[in-house]
Image (cartoon, rainbow, N blue to C red):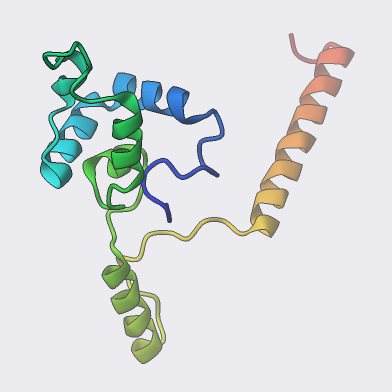
Length: 139
């Protein structure tokens, strides 16, 4: 996730819904990260100052979340790899010197050709099942 936890290409639903999702599904990780990395207590959203304004706005939370490190608890809860850039660089050096991939290297994302093959196979199976349903072979 190049630009923090809520990368715009990954979450196309908008900032408010993305934040609502984080607060609902990963509140503990988010609360921990805000306190650890920025010294901000998430409970300040429900606390008000003497003028009646929230001590912590949703806009500020979004700005802080945007710049959480990729190895933060929130990022890991959203499915990011635990590996940092240094880990990948060392694994690639290992491969360059040994000629074999590092055994701990996380699996790379499937290439578009592989995805297309998987999609084509799924469509073929769906067509076969539809034909069998139509012919009465299966219920």
